Structures are given as C-alpha cells and as structure tokens.
Length: 305
Ligand SMILES: NCc1[nH]cc(CCC(=O)O)c1CC(=O)O
Image (cartoon, rainbow, N blue to C red):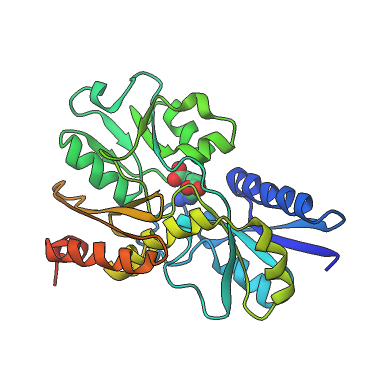
C-alpha cells in the first residue's frame, strides 16, 4: 500500500489521537502517505441529552464505520473506552497503542482535591462511573451533567457552572492541558473506565493489507490488560452506559484485575478482584465479572431484575 486514509472524529482530542497514529505509521513505514478524513458523529452532535438517553452503543463509531464500508476511509482511530464491547460484524481492531495514563483527573480552579470541596459543592460529569464513585466517596456533592468535548467541558468549568469536574488524565495530557490536573483519581481508591487511556485502530476484517500495516503499532501488554477489562465489562452487561470501572495490571506473567460496579442513586458499590495467567485475559475478566455478580452487581446494573 502506498497511502492510507484514517477516519477520525473532529474533536481536538480525536484529531490529536489520529495525528499521533498517522505519525506512528509514517515512522514504521517510511514513504507511506497517511491522510485524515475528519467526520462528524451522532455522539458529537447531540449534546443536549445524555449518551445513555440517546442509545449509547457505538455512537462515536457509526459514521466512521460507514465511511470504511463505503471505501472512503481505510481505518478509524478511537479511544478504546468509547468502543462497544461487541464490535460491529466485519470489523477488527488490528492495533492497540501503548496505554497512556489511565487515571482520572480532579479539575477545579479553586479546590486542590476532592476532599477539599465544601459540603454540597457542584461537580460536573456525565459519566455514570464517575458519578457513582463520587456518590460513594462524597454523598453530599451535587452532581450535574456535563457533556461535550474536553475543551468545552473546561470552558463550562471556567465559566463558573461547576466547582469541579472530572476528566481523563490522558485526554488532558494529549491536549497539552496537564497543568489543569489538580489531583489524580486512581487505583486503588478510584478506578478508571475499562480501557481508559488506550487508543485503538479499527479496520475492515476483509482488508489484510491495512491490518498488516498496523501490526508494528500493536502493544501486547496493553492489549492483554484492556482485553481483561473489556471482557469483564462484556460479561456484566455489554454496554458502556452503566457505572462499571475496571483496571488491570501486569505482574510478570500474571495479570491482576480489579473491577467495580456502583450505583449513581445511593453510592453503593461492589468490588472484586482476581489474579490469573496473562495469556488468558478473557478468562480473568469473566472470573471477576462472576465474582461481582455473586456479590449482587446485577441489582446495581439493572435495578428492575
Ligand atoms: N468519553 C470521552 C473520552 N474518551 C476518551 C477520553 C480520554 C482519553 C482516553 O481515555 O484515552 C475521553 C475524555 C474524558 O473522559 O475525559
């Protein structure tokens, strides 16, 4: 192949991530011409309703997949945490890049850390996972929805709409906004979304020449960790719109996975962990999911069953 077209969302973070993949590809394949195909997705356009309310699944992917099916792009770049647990048939993830910082960030103009927020302070986040963890740690806080890309969310914080917001450290770092991180929210007290901080490339499964170009970019350690986290999430419910958190770490040949399911309503949470051989991350993810369900996670995921 002489050239490759990357479908990307148009947000500054998505463009940074796609440019980064383009740079990695050019370095791995000198002479390859790589271009971006920026597209708008429903997840970017509908900002007045929560992602859960507009149906969630794959909202940020659909338009990019259509472009690949029509032959208008060869691949797409995603934040893996936004990729549904079940890919659309006909698509694969030929590469997962080395994971960046997986932690969340506490961001506030006035307060140093979560503990320093006054009683009843207003915190913005639309992530059910972040809301549930905030509820569990600080039941007094008032949680408010906050949608939009990273820059939009920071602008709303600066406008005084919130006392603090929670964002991914990786996104802030990629955008050169690391200075906005007042405190890190990280394991063991706080868990990220499954696959947070990992960038994935998606392509059609009938395009082996494209997949082959990406072989050089795949990071086996990251893939192992995120496969366990995503397998756990898949075994629990299959969607990304319930308060599920997971974090896996490699300890030599062993993989350690911690998972948590929480409740936005009352801050209840169940947590489970397990260690298993790194060669079978999916089995480990399934095992932690079953432990969570045995502790009553099902009632938190779907209060009506
Ligand atoms: N849902 C939006 C989204 N998807 C991925 C990231 C951060 C980058 C990453 O996790 O790789 C963000 C922004 C955020 O949560 O603050």
